[in-house]
Image 1: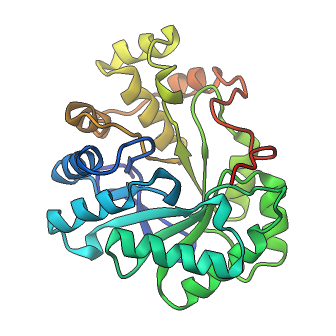
Image 2 (image 1 turned 180 degrees about the vertical axis):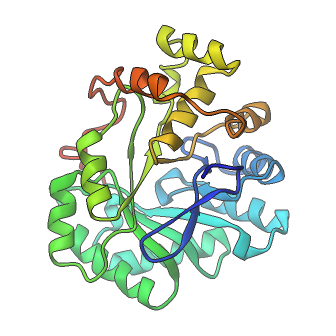
Image 3 (image 1 turned 90 degrees about the vertical axis):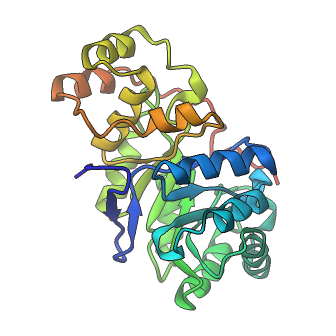
Length: 279
């Protein structure tokens, strides 16, 4: 199932998406993001996850163009920012992201947050469905949606989201949400899989890592995959980008999976999607 860095899962519309990719949240546009993306591509990564809010789509696009990898081998994700929600504004925001990335289409486009106070995500979804049906996006999805947000969206949708990208790590295992997504054939994807570095010194994870001759980061990323969650760890350092992908030569035992599952505290490092309304 997880043979190598090019291993994929199949989304409910038949599109194949890599299990492991590079995230570029909080990576500066220009040289920093270009170096990060270039390093990842050189070492076999094919999935890159950015967003309008990250303000580095142009740098990502330049790195993609410079790499010269056939477009069909890449899987590029971007996200609609909160202030651009709404039908017409979603269409405009998508075209802006596409232009900055220098691409003809996106592999995955996500609504970044539900922003319930604005109550526009259904209008945004209608626009995304249009773009999807036009072939400008291969797969559409959401980010940071809880079960009730998904219920509200699916009720009036023509297309069920293919992906829900959420905060996911050993302190926030999102079990009920993952069960919901599995029931609706929505692939879960993790952001902040290392809890922004907070978990790297966890004694339980370090003990497991020592047993396998791996780092805590590698154990967490492997746990993600064995939990059937796509993951996109971020790094700007080439050696860490390489290390994050060195997770295909071992498998966590069920006992160790259960131990890591037992670390859950339902503890977020990011905002609560029910109250995050920044636009």
